[in-house]
Image (cartoon, rainbow, N blue to C red; front, side, top):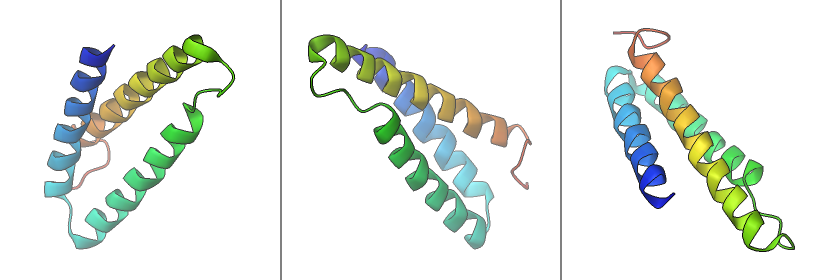
Length: 86
């Protein structure tokens, strides 16, 4: 799981930086705010049940991997012209 999370996180960071480079100042500010909100969403959505034991921890980690992959795909779609002005 660690290697998959690292892969998805690197994918997300690469796409985020590429999208950021294509935006004007207002667009950059908006993207940064959206990413902060997304991080808050991921943390809340994937929070482990404190009484769930090891299974809850694994589910939480899997959720984080999945949510990170979804966000990376979203940013990559922006790069393909689905929302980023070039």
